[in-house]
Image (tube, rainbow, N blue to C red; front, side, top):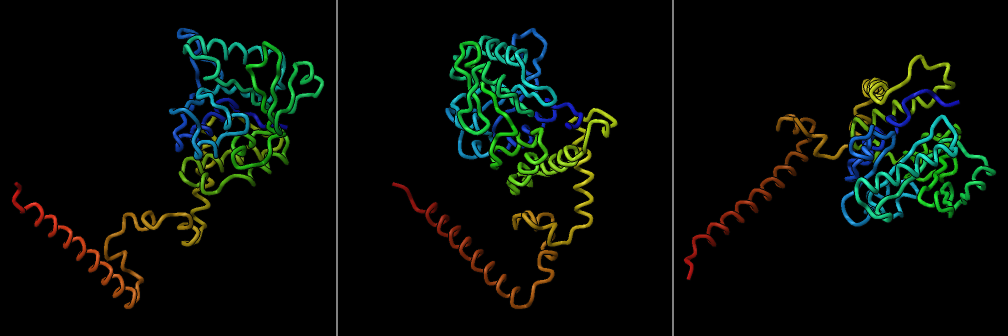
Amino acid sequence: MLVRFQSHQVLGRLLQLSLAPVEITVNVEVDLLGESPKADVLLLRREGEEWNAAQRARLPDGVRDNAAGHVLLEFKYTESVNENALAQAVAYDYFYRQAQRLPEEHVLTVVLSARTPQKARLAEWGYRERQDGVYRSPLPLLRRVWLLVLNDLPPHPHNAFVKLFASREQEREAAIAALDAPTITESAPLYAYMMGLQRTLDVKGESDMAELLTPDKILEIGEEIRQRVLETATPEEKLAGLDPQERLAGLEPQERLAGLSDAERKLLFRLLREELGNASGDASNNDKEAAKPTN
């Protein structure tokens, strides 16, 4: 059974944290008609003509290979996809393109479904599986709306962020296993949010949830877990994954020398002398060049 949380906002926060580093803008509230209420849909936007390699590495199948630079995501978490959901997605697609004055090829509208729709309903709507978990319909009113079934998406790293919300526990576990560790640990907020989200998704049954969880609450849960992990981690574990510059940040010069053997200090001294000598030589040469008379 699925846990209770603000699914639209929770997914939106995860996409914001994971996609911002690769310069993809994620809006969790989309104004479709200027003065209309904000639509409960996510919007992904990029600059440039196409998704680059870093962006494609974090976008799911059906999106990563599409040329559209505006992607509308309608997320169905606790409810199954039905005619109303599809009609709503069609409306989002139309009104957004009209408001932004965009041609069809610049906008992709996708329904993300945590649950697996019945095959009979998919056939009724004309949806056929183009690749694992990615469905399209040739029917005139539905051809603009792609359907991604999270249970059926392959457990690849680029699918993992959305597949975390699949309704089947084994599929969520496969998504967690597929996550790229360097990606989720690149920032403390993303790492904390992932830990909080994983803890939230591990809860069995809606009756166990005392409140409707918000993105901020999930981040708070994850930060508490992250702090406990840091408190019990060894120095080596705390430093794992950090660049040398990050490991030494904030240390005084004498603190950086602590623990070095005599041989290591001599080697460091020689390297510094060579570096400073080269820098001094370059500066001297530059001064000489500057002092030369010009014709």
